[in-house]
Image 1 (cartoon, rainbow, N blue to C red):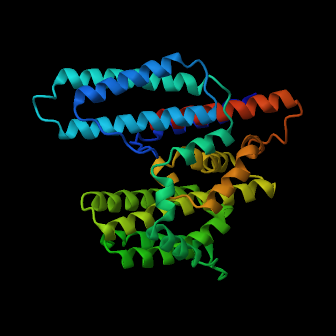
Image 2 (cartoon, one colour):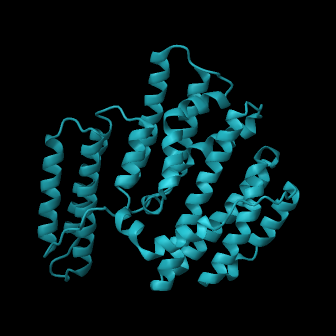
Image 3 (cartoon, rainbow, N blue to C red):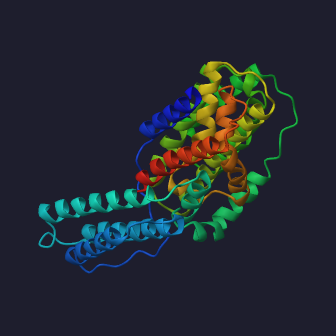
Length: 346
């Protein structure tokens, strides 16, 4: 089916363009006294994984969390080890074992069918320190801030909203302090809401420009915060991650509303909207998932079982009458997305 090929091709493209990132396990990291102890723990983990023939979603999550805990503790041990304990041979062996462990986890990922619902469980339960972050004062305060950004009822012409957004984005180079960031987010929210409400009228080139400006702003500010770590910057990081999540969810909701309205969209819009629909499952790293609110996850939980139907509908296919084919398509999409995400975690 042509539509299925288009969907799989889109997923494949997303997998290629996504960057790699380091994941920190929700589990407590272990402590190794020396590199030799760390290597032995890696060997032991590889042995355990090779004995496993299959893994359901819960078991897979445990494997991922245990391995990321061992891996991160090993890196920490290597960093503090003296030159007599560390050498090229140790590093090479560690990376060889790491690759083998990654291969085993990917094998177990494919050992059982995975749905998009399974992927959501993996994303939330392998997110770095999610429970601690959600209980923190920084998260609570940021949540209240974003709740206070009420829906803007003022009608802004789409051309005006885009022009003002671009002008606002051009000033982001000077943002360094918390209050400057919050003022920016407040004003940005007004224009972005107007753009999402009128998404069908937005020129794709303008949409891409807005997206790229946002990415540049996030990367620039994130870099400056990481190299100068302190409590104030930790608060800013919380607002940044939650801003990204809020926008990704807003994009998804806008596309779902368009699909449900049965409005005809052109080929360029199909490609762009399809990526916007898949973004929550592929573009957010584990750190972003730690800051995902319960309401945002609820949006994705509602989307997950219908994702394959929405993708088909954008391609002009109203439904698949054959239930077996529909289930096959749903499982294949789940498989593609889950495989891509787990691969990045490793």
